[in-house]
Image (cartoon, rainbow, N blue to C red):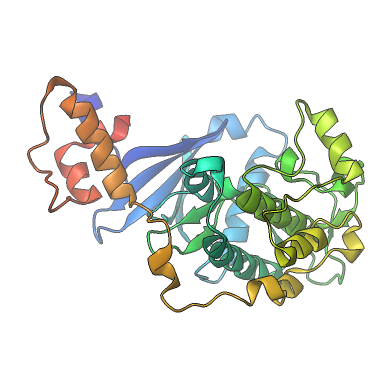
Length: 336
């Protein structure tokens, strides 16, 4: 029947849902011409039209991604499929074939990643941020959920939904809109300030991310937003003794309560804690990251095998790729 047919948009065949928000969802897709696997953000036009800044916000997000030159630590925009008569806007992006940094943390006891691996990822986050800031863009929602990993341990900054252009003709990097995830917001926003440094906001969020990666929890926790903002305003942040002195010093400088005194991205990259890592064979010691292909196949095999059956085209020696799953079981992939 019609529902069993895989959905195609232009030259992209859509598959598994990767995520969903209030006004959009992201699906895995494959370019039938090149067999490149991509991420497709599907935006419902009727929903965003009802929002005060809905359509302008989407245009801003797309404009920011278009302005980015290709960088290994920033998700690449491939194309936008947008026809006014169509009910949906499709934003086609590079797909990191691993998982999010948050997903990786969730697999670990205590949600802590080994220190050398944290350094490796964190340096890439900083390189991506340096690239964004160099293009007069502030991200404003840096957190592990928005940091994607490939199976080669490459980190890529994603989700530019609340990112903002800075005025390139103005030396100030100040912004006025309050956006982002509450637990990662700095004290200047918690204090209700309406004009603040956008780059300093990104540094603070990166500092919270570093604390989370090393400690396994966020530095400021509370039941509700009011209590959370009270804690952020007080700025009392205890770093456990198992975190080494140089990492503590870096966290302290990134979580400086005074935005004007907060360390910059370029200064963070020069910090001694990030200079110690040996690059020789470092990747061999890291926790492996499974490809999305294998994750999807294992999920399919699990569903199919509940009645004692096995998928005939899967064996331990040779796992097929996502494009084979699209061809053989398009409905199963789409329903995961």
